[in-house]
Image (cartoon, rainbow, N blue to C red; front, side):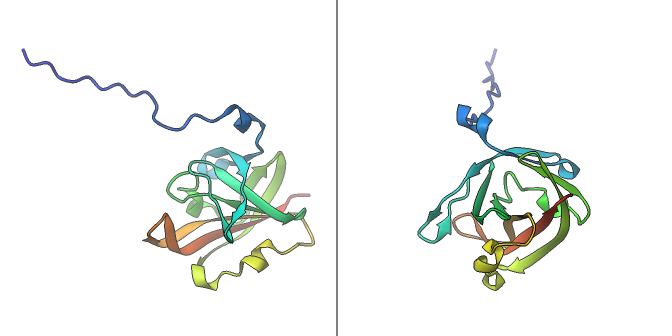
Amino acid sequence: MVTLPIYIFIGLQPIPSVDALNYPTLEISSINLKTPVSSVELVDRQLETPTTIAGFYNQFDNKILLIGHSSTVFKNLHKVEPGQSIIYNNEHYIITSTETLAKSDISMSEILADANQKTLIIMTCAGTPLPDQDATHRFIVTAMLSE
C-alpha cells in the first residue's frame, strides 16, 4: 500500500499582533473588506506599505491617506463606486470619486495637502506590474466625511 502525504492547512497567513486590536479599522461593505489600519512612516521619501493590512499616513487632521497592496488587502478596491459608504475609525465617509492615474502624474503633495473638510484618500497599485511590488498606475478613491 502506498502512503500518500497528508497536507493540513494550518493558516499560513500572518497572525495579527495584539497591537492590531488597538488599530483603527477600515470597512467597505460593498467589497466585503474589513481590516485593521496601522500607522506608516516615511522612509527615504517612501511610505512603507504594510504587507497584508492597510496603512495610514497624514500630515493634517482633515486628510488621511490609506495605502495597501492591490494583491492583498485592496485586491477588490477597483470595484468600489461613487456614492458607496466607507467606515474608517468609526466615522462614515461617502465615496465621491475614483480614478486611475499614471504613477508619474500623481502629485503626493496635492494628495497629502490639507482639506476644508475631513477627507479620506485610499490609494493602491494598478496598471502593469513593476519590480518590488510596484506598478505603473495608482487607483485612487476619494471619500468625504458624511454629515
